[in-house]
Length: 234
Image (cartoon, rainbow, N blue to C red; front, side, top):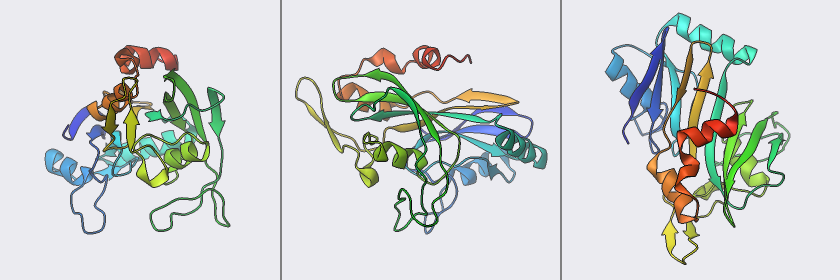
């Protein structure tokens, strides 16, 4: 899937970021979601949230000062909410909870739990569906630390499938014994809610493939099923 606009409202545009694309230019790689959006919109944009390069999903980009300020106010007041979908193995226990391990600064590309300069981090989670050895998690971060969801899942003993940095499975075995490679981390920024904008990015094929390879049911990742699990409405 290529980058595309999902919705627009009052100086803010919601854009789908595919896996493998930086949110903003990084290092020697000039390609980025913000660069694509600026070309499409013909104006400068500011990323109101950022996703790791291998992660797909919704990114909000402000293209006016008022839009940027509105999202900042929503973030400060708690009116800005994000939901992620992840395939993990094994399933966490209990099935609903919150992870609060403080996270240190990234070193050599990795974030660790604790340390002298660790910052508070909070991630709510809920098991949506399970197989014998895996689960779909709905993740709701209250903070936005680097690699937060990935590290919290790994620290809880339930790493995200395909997350090579933090111990996620690189290969999965289906109930019929077939072995499948997992080339992309099974983490997706599914839903973002703000006062003037509420938008979902459909679950991408790579995440569906990872779930099916682990014996999961296809209907588990349908929009209606995810919304029912969260108790929210579009």
